[in-house]
Amino acid sequence: MNPLPARYESLFDIAPVGYLVLDEKCTVLFANKFCAGLLGTDPNIIMNQDFCRFISDESRLMLSSVIGGSTPLAGNKTFELTLITLNGAATIAQANVVSLVNPDEYLISILDMTYRRQSEDRMQGLTQKLRDLSAHIEAGMEKEKKRIAREIHDGVGSSLSALKMELSLLRRRLGHGNPDPEIEKHIRSMSALVESTVDLIRKLATELRPEVLDELGLIATLRWYTRDFGERTGFTTGFTVYPKDFKLDPVLSTAVFRIFQEIMNNIAKHSGAGKVTVFLRKQQHQFLLRVKDDGIGIREEELNHKRSFGIIGMQERVKLLKGQLRITGIKGKGTTVLLEVPLQPNPQS
Image 1: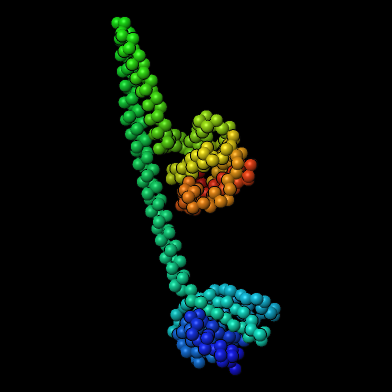
Image 2 (image 1 turned 120 degrees about the horizontal axis):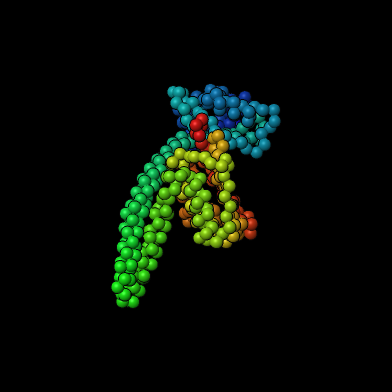
């Protein structure tokens, strides 16, 4: 007997969603045309059939737990199932089960999820390709930064240092002949300008790519950067590392340093802090970096703001490392940034 009133049956038949009614033994009491179409058949063929014949083993267990249990179904239950058509094809669907007035009868709506699942898979694939492209571009940029930094340091920096020496030599030679005071003044001014330009060049080269990162590794670089940060900003800084020294591979070291740079820049610009503490730890399969300040504390809306490009950039770097980045702020007590990155086992590390 059809459990649905005749006046409702036509409404179910024109619905773009599969509907069927099962009893407590999963026998099909009603199926609309859309549901039968998902199974590749006609409603009359599946009537009075065991619906479990048309679903996968895993789906059968899930369905049985929902409508065959000793406890009556309260409310509705939504889960994913796999439909098996008469020709053996599989279709991913979302099922929603509710009890009818008769407690032994259940109305199930079935939504075809195949297209959605395919779209999600395509989107995930596209996202991964974009991340791979981003990593490739990032690696190229780091290589170019390293080249430019070396050109600036070795080329421009060396030329300016040579010019400074030439000015110093010229000043000494003119000094023996009692030069014009104006000439002496200009030489002093030029020497001071060259010296400040040399300092600027060194700073630019360091910002592009710290030489110490390639020569001495990540720990020495972060220790130097933290100390230099405190001197430039007036912050009190603390730096702790455990064990006392360790090495990471160059790619990971560069990524961690760039994340650390962004963290410290954000602290300098937005935190209103007076003290910053840095803690690093390397375990067998994990690297941890924690940076904590005593400033105003970052707010939730700042973390999730669509124009927080610095945070977005850090998060993307961390995803490439397959790590985790957690940023927490307490109003008036500061912000803590915790970076955790998995490491490949290496007995020699």
